[in-house]
Image 1 (cartoon, rainbow, N blue to C red):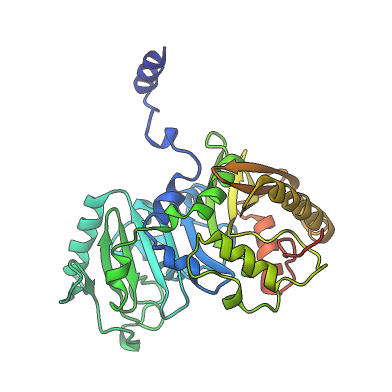
Image 2: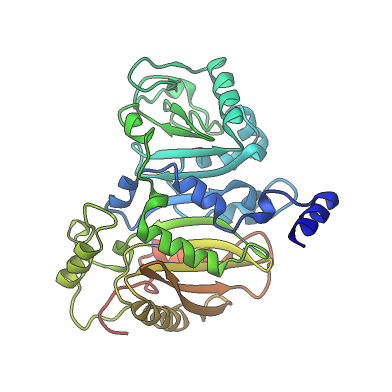
Length: 378
């Protein structure tokens, strides 16, 4: 029966690999390229991701202001700084069509931030490398094979500045580019390229990240949902006035140390959700409507259930009056861990924008986002 169904699917012409992929497939691809050390950075928002084609699919024509506003996450992704001049200009300068990009991802603060370009396959990557070497890039001698650059490390060359060029940008900064499987790594210096070229263990291998990913997968069904953007957050997001160095363990999956750090540094009787190990804030489309999904990893589902109740209550108390959305939550078992998952889905899509996400990010930038605040009591 299954073979018959597959045969009919193939005859109909719609049985593609994408149809069998879950909603987190592209996100997982990106996270496999990023070393786990990115989870140890003392930042509230550690890693950023954009599914390029999910975002492009929000509109049929050139992105409007609404689509551009949807890119509300404060992404440290260098190639995205240049798309404001239009995708045609971007594609010309990038030497590859935006339509051939699968995803972008990144971590770190400029000028040391690291950006990732996900392409369709390794052949597409090698083709782009060849094109770049025929233009402004040359091979870099050293211990990292395949590395190319268009200038000196950490050098700004304003004579070559081009705000619409993802390889240069508004300051004319140099780019160092390294192919990695079906993707590219872009940095301003070759200093960390050897470590970046060997990402195992990757972020996708982290137990606490896998738990939160399972939560996203449950909240965004592959049949009627897609993840447009996502960012990995650390517990620093929910802790105000606490030294990040006292919270994050040196090893991202050192759960026992994380528990002890929380116990030592969270003020007794403070209001908020139980401390989480890591999590995602995701911008999604669910049933063709914009949504935001929170997925946080916990040691067990008892704590995750408490977190769900706390997030739902905090949302209704602090945010619900300013943006419309249906709130639902649940805990999702993920191996030894558990994810607290809360979705906020708009009634319908008014445009390509996501008003829920914009509201969340505005509150965060104004230091007024308390939905994920950590405490000892709800």
